[in-house]
Image (cartoon, rainbow, N blue to C red):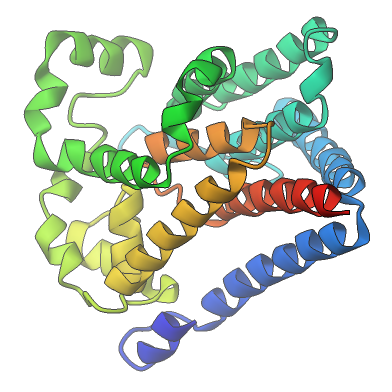
Length: 317
């Protein structure tokens, strides 16, 4: 809100984008806080699961029976679904899978068929909607669910989470030559079905200095993110998690994100169900080439805190 207010007379963006974004986070925070205080955390998470499942199923049905595809003059196309574009629909399915794992932590071994079906469903939707980032995210999530316990002592270190975030979001900016390594190039071109210039992202990253200097202290505001990104990079967004935070909220926003992330990781040590932490690390990994530090990331922050608060409250009774 501060970034939006400070820039309200500098750009054409509406401050109401920041208002609605903030209200979404405030209402979700109040919801989690109420569930914690009333002792109904599991019931609240189950309600979210049922609601999201309804929207996922409805979106998938309409995706098949009533597709909306727009073709561009240059040969490309874009698809719009009931809940938005491909990122909206795949990230919503990913949240559904995470909530399922959160609710069935102790029963996953007994529900292998349904568990496998949930993950396969996510992969099918990701492939069908041509969202290669979520295909990669799903694979990473599966690996973390299978082998995460062996490295939890590392993943649950607050400082490591920040270091991992910084490394992820600077590796391509600092070293484009990495994409030319044969093994990496093979993964990008044959598995992710992308070009080695990362669909124009390299050209965006070349403007990093301009992005960071747009308004380094408190950013241009989330309202003006699109306008400034188009002006500086000729792209709708900067295609990188930390650059998006710097552009929107400046270094103040970056510091707040780091502090919040470290607090969430610290609190998660009280909870034996690490699925939301794995989801957070997936979002951090995907932020290499996407702007994932938006509502979705904070949902996993708050779900992690809700589970940790609930356990702490039960232990203190």
